[in-house]
Length: 548
Picture 1 (tube, rainbow, N blue to C red):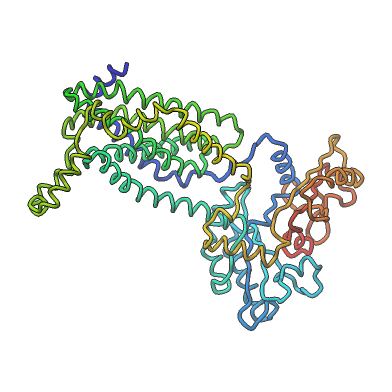
Picture 2 (picture 1 turned 90 degrees about the vertical axis):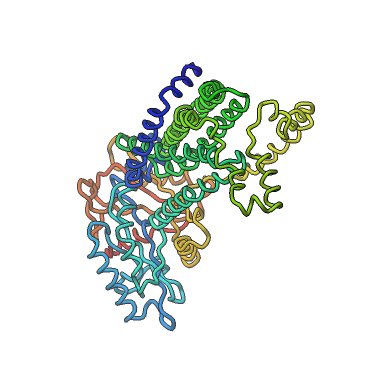
């Protein structure tokens, strides 16, 4: 089959090149808009009890938006946050900001929103530091899914950063998510711009010629372009996670260049053996092409096992691997052999010896001797016998004669490398993923230092009645007693979330514009309690005061 494929690719080499290049470039153009269609969701098992409980809690109590944006304000030098002039200015700016973005912002809540901070409960007083140099506000955003909320943040971020003369520090979930995705996108573009030229230089040192070095790099670039187009097409029918994009760039480029090395090296060996171009292409596809194909099949098959995981973002990563590896293999057994069929022995063109055409380099003895030596080392196309007689062939023979002497130390070294995995700690999205000097990470760390009791690390317990009757206080107390012995709970507070007035909410309106699920005559069969590890929700407290 591979012999027939090699003959077919050679016979229709110009058509093969035209079709594959057009498809990949077209896919690249189509995939340029992929960034607008990726999702930030998919980290959780939609069928898990925790997700079902979260959905139920959101339906009854409304989505918890406390940690969307946390804006930390610092009073000017010589003043405090309770300075009337400064406070009125910031409050006016916040109110104007809310009015200017009615489609994105729910409101804002904080110590600054209180009409009489002196009479506020201790937990609300804690939203300003003891020296009154700093305070923070919570800014919840509109939206019922992660992507909408993040897009709303992106829309308001420029105006948000102008508050208090641009000195406001923005932390919270959405600034971190925006900074993280932005950092990854910037690094990805930097990698794509720098990787191809650097890899081409390395390949030049491997092959000794610019033409041979450029072929794997071209395959890598086309693989990335085509794979992004495939992901954009997949986004029409289902969610594609943001992290699928860097997977395509990293794996697609590496695998494509690796496969290109196989094919080009094998073709040069066949030419050195004396075969004509057509026979060399056919034999290359029969050998290196088979290796590339089975390698791609093994990678795709092993990656497919990840599809058993329920998380949606894992599925997106698998699809990205399918697209990148599959397209790299396809280009390596179609486009690349077709190009080699056209180049023939000119595959070694523009090599080191080309520099000898420059009079200065040719006439100066030192440069001439060096270039001739370098060309002999790099540019000469070697037969299989010459390869086996070279460094790599001698190394393989040396290792094969002493298998245990090499296998045992390598196995021990690999085991030692695995040991640190015992301390591996998994977690969700965090500012720790950002560079140490990133402004959002610095803002989050500063907030955690100033207000350690308000970092959102809460565990929500949703209690639902099985028979439709109201959950009683005794049932809540029983569940609390069962949960208390579990390790990890550090806060003794056990607070019920207030229930905001939303369309279709079965809760009964309570005082100050809020609703309490445990209010008299309330038949709501579900209740939500928080056992906190980092403090009580500031937004919920302010809702009770009627300030949000």
